[in-house]
Structure formats: structure tokens, C-alpha cells
Length: 266
Image (cartoon, rainbow, N blue to C red; front, top):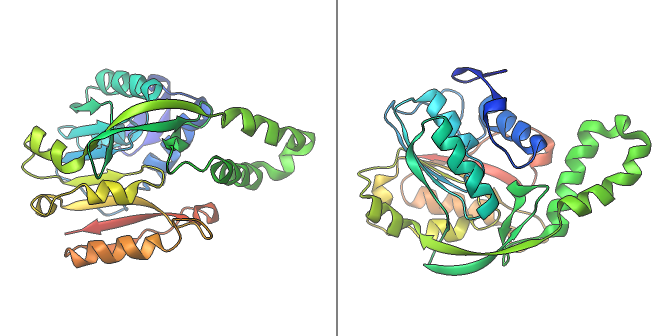
């Protein structure tokens, strides 16, 4: 039993892909509030879009804060989507789960699924297995460095196994298509965490739908020496030009370099 935003929260009642990921997601979302800064509140009947939902931990966070909220969760990876749907059903989260990714066009593309680190899974066009494996290695070494001892020699072998690539063809939809189909009158929070596809998700929003979106929390990849370099300023500028007050949330730790959360409010 752990202490969450809404009181005691039993992680044993959450279906995950890997126990280490489930614990990480709880700490990141419930404890560190990575997508919703302290002091920021949502209405009790909030409408939330969770793009890149994984197993639904953010949906459970929203449910703990706002029991009457509706959360529409989008997760294209078939093995993860199954866990997501069961978690939303078990915890009676209103809204729905949708088995596709969001982008700037409707269609289909190949995704890369990492069985040992499902949260790093990405569209093939944006996947960077070596970079993501190195990112996780740095996290492990920083947290357990001295305690690793002789096991440090096995770390790379373990990560290679966790990051083995499993391809899945997955459908894509534009966010504006979804907003129109669901007939949403407004969106209190749009959360986007899609492993380097954040620009495409934002580009899938028509001008007519932007005024409906009151807040955004977007994980932005801005990794030096890669195609994402400079993206943080691009996203900030784009949101500010649309009238949002956008800023970068403080990183929970130094490992966040190259991956930051932009929070914006209308």
C-alpha cells in the first residue's frame, strides 16, 4: 500500500507490464506529479485526454484527484492496451480506452515495442533504441551505482534483453478527428507523452479545436545531436503564439536532460 494523491493507493491492484515500470510510473505521476504541477487543480468533472497512456497510471491519478472525471486514454501497443483497459475497468475510470496512436494524419505505421521497458516504445520513425537504452542505463547507475558491484558487468546484457525490438503495425488518428467524434465540449487537460512524436500530435489539432483545450502537459524530447535538438523552444513558442502561458516544469532529477515536461494553461 502506498500513499497517493487521493489517499492510500494499492499498487497490487494495478496491472502492469513490468513491476519496475509500475513502481516508476507511480513515483513519477503520483509522487512527483510530473504532468500536473503542485497547486494546479482540475474540476471534479474534468475531461482529460491521455495520449500515450501506457497502463493507465495517469488516468488513475486523475481519478484519485477528480472521481467524476472522464479520461480518454490512447495507447497503440497491443500488450499494453490490454493492461490499460483492465485497469480503467477495475478502477471504474469514466471515459474510454482507444487502441491507436495520435499523429498529424490518419493511417497506419510500425511501432517498436520494448518488452522490458514498454514506456519507451515508439513509432519506428522516431525510435532510438541505443539512445533510450543509454538513458535507462544512466538512471540505473545513478540510483544503484555502488550497490551494483559485480552485477554492473551484467547490466548491458540485461538492458539489451529488455530493449529487444518487437514490431507492431498500429493505426494512427488525428487528435481533431477524435475530438469531433467524441463531441467533446472542452478538454481540461491534454497530456502527451509519445516518445518523440509530440510535434505530430500537436499538428493534428485543427485551429477550431485549440480554444477547447484549457491545459496541456507535453513531454518534449530535445536531445543534443539528434533530430529533436531545439524542439523545446519550438514547442514553447508554438504554444505561446496560441495564447497559452507555457513553461518548463522543474526536472525531478538530472536524468531528465533531453526530456522535459512543458505545462501550458490558457
